[in-house]
Image 1 (cartoon, helix red, strand yellow):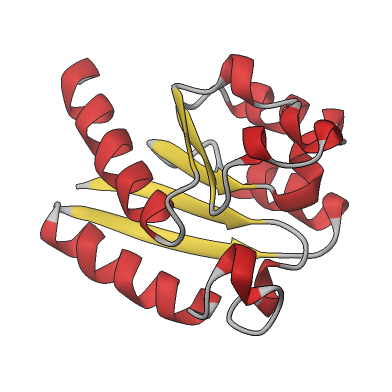
Image 2 (tube, helix red, strand yellow; image 1 turned 120 degrees about the horizontal axis):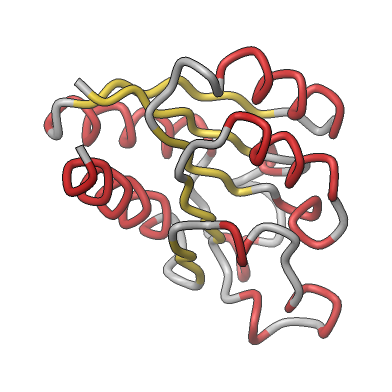
Length: 147
């Protein structure tokens, strides 16, 4: 069984109510429920975490990243600003997939840069909540190929 971390950054706790034209009407808890079901069907376990605090995300990665097989992360706004989250992921040296609900490359210029993309196994963006499910499928497939 593959052990996967699902990490969500700032403001993602507001999914379903915030800017539904960009992020849809599905809540983060609904996405997590669906991710857990999908993971179970793929013989994987999922541990999810969300924080609006950069330091809490770094701490979670440090404390849990060593014992996982891979990570799925939607770092939210920290995608474009956080060297600390990048360094935390590098510290645990686990493969990860970067996901985004919206297509960050069709948005404001500052959102088109990611501190994570160049170290990620892959990036999935622009498919709404499906970005998460595609990310899980891609990560599990990647992990099976390298094991």
